[in-house]
Length: 338
Ligand SMILES: Cc1ncc(C[n+]2csc(CCOP(=O)(O)OP(=O)(O)O)c2C)c(N)n1
Ligand SMILES: [Mg+2]
Image 1: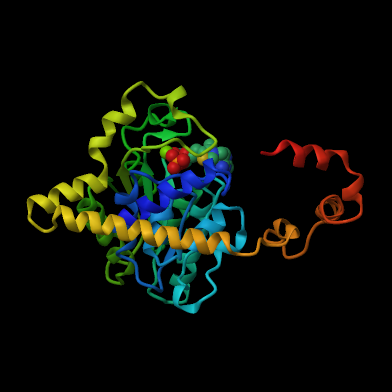
Image 2: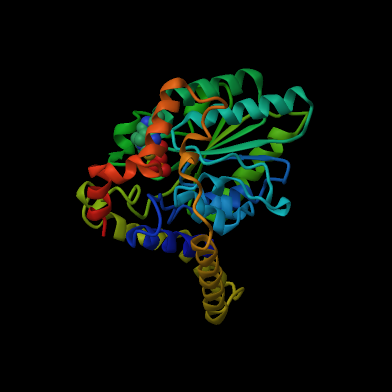
């Protein structure tokens, strides 16, 4: 959790300095993610959205890959070395679409009689998408081994959860789909660990016929929605500061100190080691040759559509070919950037 926080802080700073692209912080949500994926085996599947940096770090995604990804380089999604390869899907930016992928993957495991489980993470806002209902309905009917982890962080960009749903909880939505919903304090690592352990074991068990569970982790988005957002414009004054006392790392530290499981010196040392690890990853990231420009067309379609081919050729002519020299827009852009 401390390493994930150090990564998060650095990624935000890199974006501000123009050394990285847009970034979505998971500050305050480490307690929902790390204890949950701790219950997964290597053969299980993690199906993340854009706020699951902590979950990915816990699933051995190298930090340099995450820096690459957030720097706009799709190669970040694919760790090259086998020792880092795990069943982690790439980050899904479209809200809610990946829930269907998680259900499909777990349905496939069920058909093949494999014991793997798919765990997917999403936000409170995603529960208003049609994909959420489709995914949960299918999972309920076919009893797929899927663990749906909703991080209810109270906000979907500027929309508070009170305007997102009239239900008194997100967990209760599972009842309509015919399976269990559990609500936990998402900033309590023990509560999250136990709830997700129960759901993963249930999904894997044959006697109980496995099946899905919806877990609502009640948490708080401590930062802005993304680096393109300014939460102070729409959140009540003092709300974010007030929630700092529930920071899951702080709470775990307090608990461990009270139980004499950790000292201040050990805490400092973990923080220091994490920062050093992050700095090393940044150095590696900044020394990687940028991907070729046409790469932005390369990962969506197996074969490009005609309009996309035209756009690619136009872009390459603008930036790489002879046209570049004659193009006033390029001059303006290049002259205009600091
Ligand atoms: C299908 C789709 N619609 C809209 C967006 C723009 N968008 C990005 S994040 C977001 C809000 C998501 O809120 P929530 O599900 O609560 O997740 P959180 O950001 O709080 O983690 C929206 C509307 C998108 N990425 N995809
Ligand atoms: Mg949210």
